[in-house]
Image (cartoon, rainbow, N blue to C red):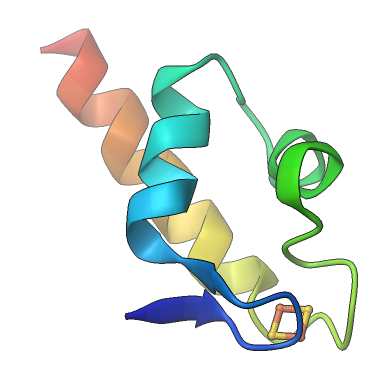
Length: 58
Ligand code: FES
């Protein structure tokens, strides 16, 4: 499922960037461009980041 329609970035890709050390929406944007188009997906990116941080902290 796409998280970022503008850049065609999937949720799986975002998870991979999180696992690879991306710790902010900007860091994800630097890697794949997500969030750097219309900006609609930024909240969704942050949600994924938060969940990822919780799961890596556990
Ligand atoms: S949907 Fe991600 S920047 Fe537009």
